Image (cartoon, rainbow, N blue to C red; front, side):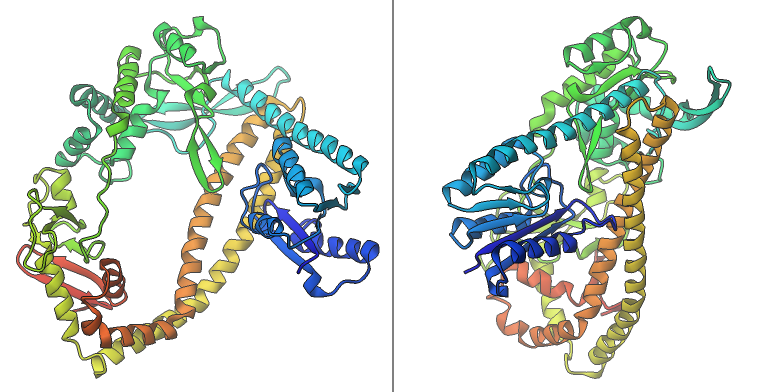
Length: 548
C-alpha cells in the first residue's frame, strides 16, 4: 500500500524551473528529510501536465483521489498550493474530504501541513489569496478590453464575410503615430450577406437557406458550399446590424456591457462586439450575450436593426429543432467509404419510409448522394442505390481476393515501405511542431503579462490583443497538425502488426461475417479499402489505390 501520494501539475510546458519533474523531485526530498528514506512502493506519483488549476477535472488528480478514497495513502504531498486548485470552494471541499479520510495534506513551498490545526487555518487563508490574485488578473484583462471596445476598432483575426481589415493611422497627443485597423467593405460579399438575411427572414429556416445556396452554387469566400453552421454564425454576428436606438435597447435588455453612450447609436455605423468567444483549451466557445462588450464600430451596418433582431428571435424559436437528431448508424457498412462518382460527395444512408425488412430480417435502406439531398437534385441527380444489396456485394467481392497471392503481398509490402519512409519524416515534423508550441506558449505568457500590468498604454494593449489572437489561432492550427502527425507516426510504428491482423482477419472474415457487428465489419473494410465509387450503375472499389 502506498503511504505517500505525490501530485504535480503544470498548465503548459514553459521550460521554467517549476516543471513537473522538478516538483516531484522536491517533494521526494521533503519526504526523505521529514519522514526518512522510504522504498519506491511506499510512494506513488501522479502527474498532470497541460491542465489548468481552475478546477479539479484532471485525469491523474481524479485517479489519485479515487485511490485515496479507497484508503491507499496517509499523506498527499505537493510542491505548491495552486498545483492542486485555484478555487477556494474546490480546495475547501478537498481538505474537508481528506480530513474525513484521515489523510494529511502537505504543501512544501508554503510549509502547510493539515495534520495540525494551524496548518489547516493557514492553508485556507492562502487559497483565498490565490483565487483573489486570479480574479484580479481577469478583472484587469476585462478592463483593458472595455478600453479597447470604446474605440470601435477591429482587433484582428478572421474578418467576417463582407469586410476586410484596413490599416489606418492616427496621431497621439505625444506626437507619435500609431496604427489602428477598421473594417472596410467588400461590395460583392456584402450583397451575399444581404441576400442570406433576406432568404432567412423569408424561409425562417436555416436548412432551406442552405438548400437555396447549394442549389444556386453560391459559395463562401473560400470557394466552398455554405454549411448550416456557417449560415448560422453569419446571422448571429452583430457586425452587420445598424447601430441605432432599437439595437441599443435590444442589447441593454440582454444585459450586454454597452461601452458607449446611447447617442453613439445613431444608425450610421455597424456594431462592434467584443468577447463573443473564449478559448477553452483548444476549442473556441461562444459566450452568452450578457458577456459581450458592445459599442459602435467604424464600419457601416448593412442590416436594419429590426430585421437583425427578428432573425435572432427566429433562430431562438427554432433552437430545439435547429439540428435534426442524427439517426444512429447501426445499419450501413459502407458509410464513410461510399462516394458519388458524379460529384465526389459522400453517399449517406437513408432509411426507407415504410421500414421494410429484407429476407434476412434487416431493415431496408438506400444510399443517397449528400449533394443531391442538399441541392434537391439540382446540382447532382445520381441514382440512389439499395444499401442492403450494395453492402452485401462489396463484402462478397472482397472475399474473392487471393489473400495469400502475389498481388496482395505486393500491395502490403509497398504500403509498409511508404509508411516506414513517411514515419521518419513525420517524427522530424513532430519535433518541429513541439518546438513551435513551446515558443507560442512563451509568447502568450509575455502577452498575458502585458494584459495583467496596471496602467498599460492603450496602443500597447491593442497590439498585444492582436498578437494574442494570432498566437491563439496559430496554436490551434499547430495542435491540429501535431495531432495529425502523431496519429500518422503511430500508424507507421504499428503497421507491421496491423498487416498481420488485417491478413488474419481477411482469412477468417467469411466465417465470422454474420457474427460480426456492423461496426466491426465497417472497421475491417476500412483497413483495406480507400474508397468506393458509385456511378449510378456500377460500383468501383479502390484498395490501396488500385481499382478492383
